Image (cartoon, rainbow, N blue to C red):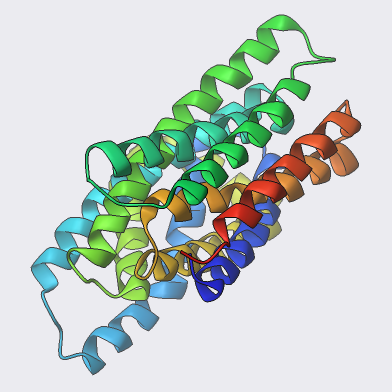
Length: 291
């Protein structure tokens, strides 16, 4: 992985950890929250995407719309699973479990199914990152009741599977299909909003959307801005580096996220989390070794 790609991924990791802390603070229906931040993202990014497409002469709109629709559905599944997990368990369990499962599945599929190539040192680096994530995840199970801990692992695994699915699909979109990352994500956000909009046919959810938009306007704004910005950086990195390397490097966000969870939410066993974080950083160092 080139230094530029690694810098993009690490910047994205910081943004990812910050918006996840904001999402953890939100209470209420997970689907309503996802619709609110997806709609806000669409409003912010769709004009930018249209300007880019106009400058490029409106290339291959059919592929963009179809790929964006698939991505929108996958990102909705991810958002609902993640925020349901946050509502039912600690961030210190859900977040590392999700961020560990996602790259593991992504790297396996990218190497075994898609036939991507990676040097041995990079593969070891990815595995070290995942090992560090596992250490941090194990620390989150202490100090909570068994059912809450199990719920965190279960929703974390579901979120990780969604992460792997959208990472592989989006990597295909910006590499094989050569779609512009910004225009692609703008299309993704629009589809996220449209495909979740039917939930608002229920009067109770409409009322919940109004209440949530007033009660959590800062959190919605943070997720709407930081989530797309961070992920666009990842999509750009995917254009020049293998998905099998980008996916685990993204998980450096766990270093920041778990420490913020301990600091802000008083979650237990910070020493174990720090050790796991150092293992993650060691893996990232291996990923940075020139091929």
